[in-house]
Image 1 (tube, rainbow, N blue to C red):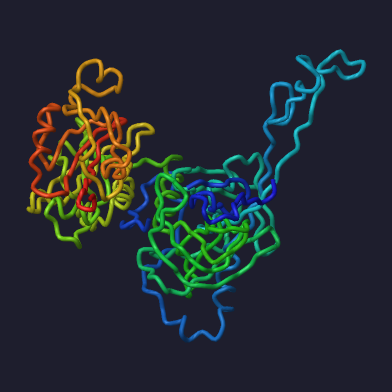
Image 2: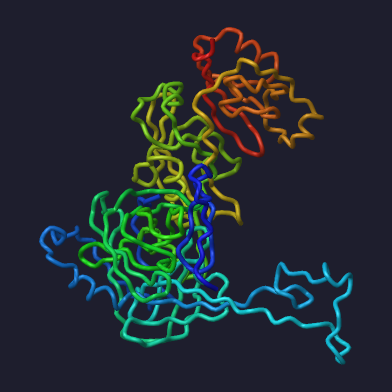
Amino acid sequence: MKDQTILTASSTKPLWHRLAVLGCVTIATGSLVAFTPGPLSKGKADSLHLQVSNAPASDNARTFPSFAPVIKKVAPSVVKVSVTSQAKASPAGMPEGLDLRRFFGGEMPDMPGSGSSRQFHTPKQQGVGSGVIVTTDGYILTNNHVVENADDIKVALNDGREFSGKVIGRDPKTDVAVIKIDAKDLPAVTIADSDAIEVGDRVLAIGNPFGIGQTVTTGIVSAKGRATLGLDYEDFIQTDAAINPGNSGGALVDVDGRLIGMNTAILSHSGGNQGIGFAVPTNLARWVMESLVNSGRVDRGFLGVNIQDLTPQMAKEFKLDQTTSGALVADVTPGSPAEKAGVKSGDLITAFNGKAVSDSRHLKLQVGATPAGASVPLKVLRDGSSLTLNVTVEALPGDKLAQAAPSGAADDALHGVAVADLDKATRDELKVPAQIKGAVISQLEQDSPAYEAGLREGDVITEINHEAIKSAEQATSVCSKPVTKVTLVKVWSHGRSRYVVVDESKVG
């Protein structure tokens, strides 16, 4: 399957329309992790002997007349990953998407003299990506989208040798995969602490763009903590080093030749490099890789909170300093680790396990990287006071995600909102759980600040300015005597709660 990027030339399209993963098969529609990977558990992963350096970057960026010594050191660790997969076929043996019955009627014509239905050979698809050798005995880091549909994997080393590759594990939630080749004494890359990099640091990208052969480009770290592809767990490093389709799974290294990221996607109108590339940071990739090698899966921690980012207006309504950062708890799952620890709706989580929480996405990453059973301190702000709670993290149940709630617009109000009591018929229709109390929005003017803020008919108002709402009459009463034109509303909809700031100050 050839490299392909399906990109729109119009910048008016949503961002995800203009994002493409760099490898061989996937077009994705669309954070650094503040944790240090722990030691490997004993067992299968004992052979995963990583070379790790936590020393700060040297002054090589200023003193090097050439990056040739760095490239000579790192280039042997970067490999070409060639993938072959069989195109899917219909029950009639036809390539997927092709149905000749449209031309021949309900039955397929028989092959001459055979008495059997016509058979169609489906073409094999081929693609090329990149990978990075991380252990001397053949473990290779690459992207999930490079190998997810592979029937056959060939790994070509920089010295010309070629090996068959085997998928050890894949994690679509981070687009990380690990493959293995049967070889010894391989040139493994040294892995750096990706948390230590800074915007402006010089970096080098090495991979196999368009399958033409190993290519090296240089640039800087343009940004950190990007979330662009719509994956469940994202923490991309952004760089302007030239990377193109085929670079997926390739190395992003610092000036000392240490791996700081794995090239994954580009933002482009043309399908080629336009100076905006994204790489999975090594701290995230390493944790996923070790989990896959250890157990063949990635076990993530579960806290049991519905969280959202703290906007300046919400900070004002919660009487918090405008510079305060953290993840705002909109709801707590009954029986969850968070509830058992004493976390409440309206709490602002500012630190998890001793690490500052900048926003809801970073908290999700931190919790996900915490092993089940770990007891960690959780720092929260509640009613202006700082509290430290101890929470015992549990395993993420099934496919349930500890995902952030949609933040909603910042400017909203209750003018133009009509409410009704939440009776049994309404509960049944909207599938509102029995424990949810409040007033349901029955009508909403579309030109109102409330609508612009994200409130919708069918939303259940459960709090207004921190006051619990039990009925439509109470909601009307609370709104009839506003202290200001800004109202903090908590609503339940589609199985989750969220806070919304309602601002009427700009109306009239």
